[in-house]
Length: 165
Length: 165
DNA sequence: GGGGAATTGTAATGTTATATCATTTCAGTC
DNA sequence: GACTGAAATGATATAACATTACAATTCCCC
Ligand SMILES: [Zn+2]
Ligand SMILES: [Zn+2]
Ligand SMILES: [Zn+2]
Ligand SMILES: [Zn+2]
Image (spheres, each protein chain N blue to C red):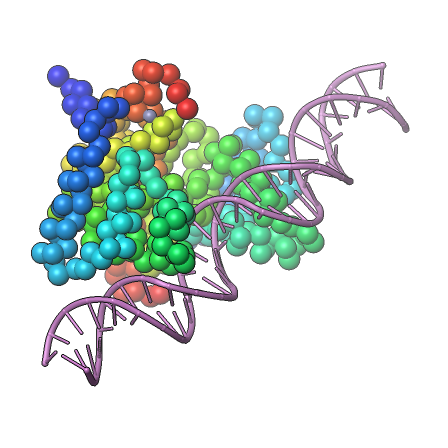
C-alpha cells in the first residue's frame, strides 16, 4: 500500500508541461498580487525550471550572458530574490542552488529529497515531518520561523539503475 | 509537562566545562580509533567550541593567523574535514559554518535549532523527526544517506528578553 | 509628458571553498 | 640512529558563491 512514488518526476515525463504549468502559475500569481514578473525575472524562472535539478546562480548567469550583453551577478541575484519573495522558487541551502516550487500558491518551507547521483530534486510537503519539527522545537522552548530540511540519498531511478553518474 | 528546555545551553552556564568535556572526548575517541588529533586539529576544534554559535572557516583562519604565521584556507579546511570525518563537529549548511558535536561517540545527522537573534545553536537528536523523515523518504522510493535539518527562529532567551541583537 | 518609485546596468569587492605541488613530520623498519 | 613511505602541513593560485554602491533606465500614475 505505501509507495506513492509520485514525488519524483520520472525519467520520461513531459517536462514541457512542467515548465508551461510553472510559468502560467507564476504569471497568474504575480498578476493577482500586483507583482511585476518582468521579462528578466520570467526568463530566470524558466532557467531554474529547465529541469528538476538545482540550478546555481552562476549557471543562470552563464545562460543569461549568451542572451543579454552585460548580465552580471546582481542581475541574477536580484531576480532570484524576487522569485524567492514570491515563493516561486526555493533555495537549497546544502547546494547553494535554487529549484522551482511546485506549489507556489501558498507560502511554505518544504522538504527536499536530493539525489546524490543525478541531482534530481523532489519537493515534499509532509505534515508528519512538519509536526515532528514543530513538536521538537516547542519542547526546547524555541519559536520556529524557517525550516530547512534537505535529505540526500538515491532517487528511485538511481537506486535500481545503479550509479549512472 | 513538556518543556524539557535543556537543549539550549543557557546564558550563564559553565562553558569551560563544555570545552574541557568536548576536548577530552575527542582525545579519547581519536585515540581509540587510531586517528591523529594533531595540535592543529585540536586547536581548530577548540576554536569551534569557543561558544555555542556556528563558526565560519575564515573566522577560524583569523584566529589561527594570530598564532601561526602562514595559516591559509587549506590549513583550516583540512582540519575541518578531519573533524567532520571523525564526527567531532557538524557543518551547518544554512550558515556555511561549523559547530561542535555534543555526542561524537556515535555517528548521526542531528537536527539544529539556530537562533536568528543571537546565533546560539541547539543540537537535537529527535527520534520523531528522524522517523518522519525516513517515512516520507520511503514513501517516495528514496534511500536516505544524509539528512540536513536546520530550523531557524528564536531561542528561549531571545524570545523573552526581546531582540537583544 | 513630468515626477517618483521600481527595475536594471555596471564596476568593484567580499565571502566561502578547492586544486595543485612542495615540504615537513612521523611511525615503523632495518 | 639513519631509511622509507604515508600522513600531514605549507604555500600559491584560483574557483565558486554573494553583496555593496552608484548610475541609468523603465514604468506607473498623475
Ligand atoms: Zn518536469
Ligand atoms: Zn537520481
Ligand atoms: Zn557551553
Ligand atoms: Zn538567541
